[in-house]
Length: 350
Image 1: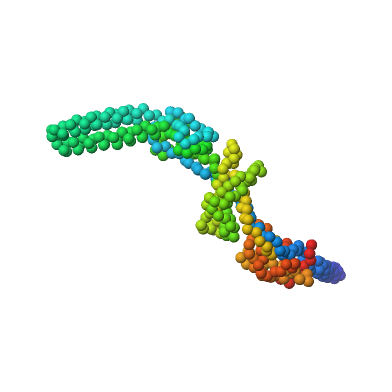
Image 2: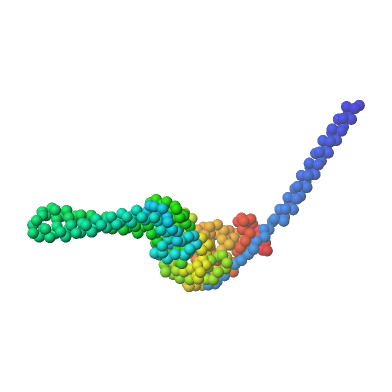
């Protein structure tokens, strides 16, 4: 009897589980049908191509760099006796920066100077003797060689002494100092980093359609992104002859730093290239383009159905493209929402 009851309970449980699974399946099917009905028409935002004046002006961003940078290296040896310029100081070309101990080199210079003077006196005496044929031509030639040799030694000794007074080779601001009083210098010891920011370079990158609109010497309005500064007049100084790996071209713009050198190397800047060439064209928002600018398409909406259509484009600005073939003025085109679309899908305008 108990065995029979157990069997009945087991059968009832199996039936209950089967019923629940069937009920869940029906519920899921109902939800899927509702979702399919809801997603039958995909919401999109529409636009249409319109005739207008195409403006080829554009902006490009980059970093300001100093017009000159220099890492000053030692050309002499010896101990530093005096440091006259430090980090943050402004210097002009020729300003004295450091003094190096020069006692030994000064003594060498005095010795070479004396030897040179003696060689000149010897040559004068030999020339007088040669006039009376009292010495040979070889002796006279050796006296002349001695003068030339000691003169070269004198020039070198003076240069060694001069190099103990280390001066700024360019004007600018000392960005870093690497030595102190008492430091012993060797040849090529790094002394200073000097940066000239009186004029700056703004290096920007432009694409192939933009680079053709830029000319060397062209005026450009430049603005530093930090602090909302004023517009600064710049000039295109160089245009790359070859694109980089991202198919962008480097353009170098030179600007004069405003008063107190408010621009700093490394800051971000924006260059505004004003292109005066404007003309009538059929224009479409750039975001309506599907795919790349090299192989562009758009979704045209007809009777609430999105149809993928190839188009041909001409000039490209930051937010508009010129349509040269494939569309007519007034046609409805999907501007946003293309990510969910495919050819032949039903849409509804937001």
